[in-house]
Amino acid sequence: MADALPGNRERAVVFLHGSNRTFDRAWPIAAHVEHARFAVMPGYGDGAAVPFEQDAWESTLIGTCSPGAVVVAHSYGGPIAMRAAARRPDLIAGLVLFEPAAYALARGNAAVEAHIDRVQPVLDTAAEIGTAQFAVAFAAALTGTAGTSPVSPDELLSADRQRRLPGPWALDTPSDVDVPMLVITGGWNEEYEAIASQLHRARRLTLTGYGHRPQDHPGAADALLGFAGQLQR
Image 1: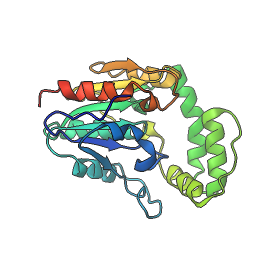
Image 2: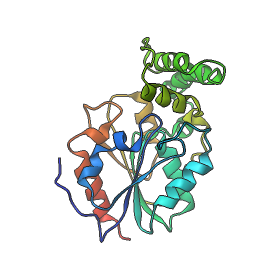
Image 3: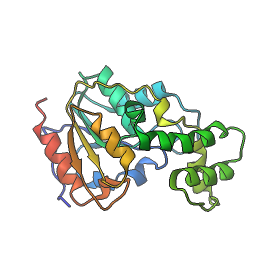
Image 4: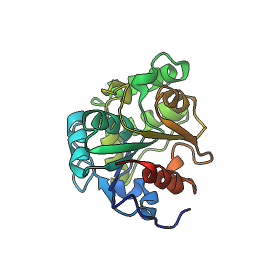
């Protein structure tokens, strides 16, 4: 892992979490980045979960950025970051996307469609079933194995946040983003590789051995900082 290295002329690096981890648990890599900021989405701070609004997530992200920022997003945060950058290329200079859940761009791919077929029925019933029941059903749809029911307040809050989100394939996801992008996948899952292949203008990197969290790979900090250091503005 890299030592703490500076960004380019105090360039802000803004970290956007995914759907089921709060900012403090999502980004241990941030310890290696100077000028790191965290975009904390509505309902992911100290309060209760709230209904999802893509515009609200995007506005929160944009409000955390300063001109020339690099946005680093994981999974569900990927489409949010992409639309923010498409709308505000004057503010966001580049994107680093770790396994972005930009499913809307890879519709028709067999692995993507199979995932949606498994998960969407669970999401359709999310408002009608209890939080613990949802968590078990959602985990089974994702992994194909029965999970344990959440018990602790933190586990129940995480499940409540998740059940309020639409499937990422329902998000408004731009196919063309006019800022430099680095897309990092873990090489373990056909869906995320299919999504990455649709981001034609992005640089790609595979960091194996860490599943859906390639940002935990020892080489992730160097990849992020190298990308940020090459940006022109």
